[in-house]
Length: 278
Ligand code: 9MG
Image (cartoon, rainbow, N blue to C red; front, side):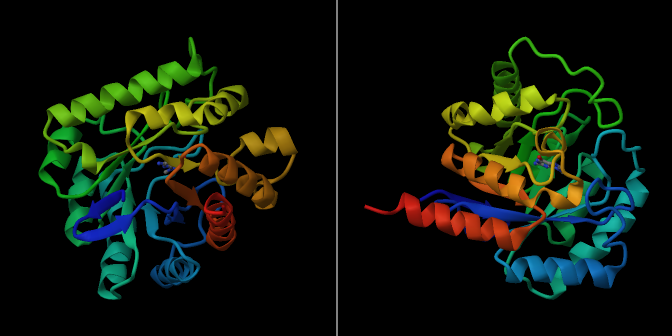
């Protein structure tokens, strides 16, 4: 049994799980501005939990290509009230804080977050040291460059081994700083400084990442590679997202980060039933 201890809440990862996306930002690529009020954010989180999300990933700074940076104060003002309100409601899901800022990681965990989702893999100054003092797991994601410029000619010698080596090095740094391996998750970072071809190679070779022996989180939901492959607008990428999620599940993904929780849960239930058949 693969258990993840999220500040005392144990999540059994022997069955794949869904991480529902809650962007409290005015400018995220798919749902920007929709959950700006506290009531709308809470209603959306509770709906995703009813649909089966095990994690709610709350982000206050957009990481879409070209997005502008947000100050610590502004990001804190956007996410902390949502975390506090969800904690008061005693929700049956783990709150994940999507941030790269150590100052917010600490505040969010104090407010009730049970997981840190860092698209910068704890590379900000002081992040590794801080997280070594907290009792929550952290997802280390690969990104080439910074959101504002990352899609300007991303380059790899070999995208699969370059991303693998980056994540392996980040895992080593975390372990050396005293973060137990049991607290680490990895994510190749689809769409973060990657062309469509890079994303497809990573997906095709996703199972290679299982050699690290850590839970694999993937975020493919509505991402722009589907615009290129399917020629679909962001609101019409559900089938593509579910197809990509199924491929990821078959190659070892433990957590699927998704906007469409209900449909992603159906895909997981079908996948699990087929996997467990004689
Ligand atoms: C915040 N965020 C946006 N996309 C993501 C992805 O693919 N993985 C993770 N871990 N976080 C993401």
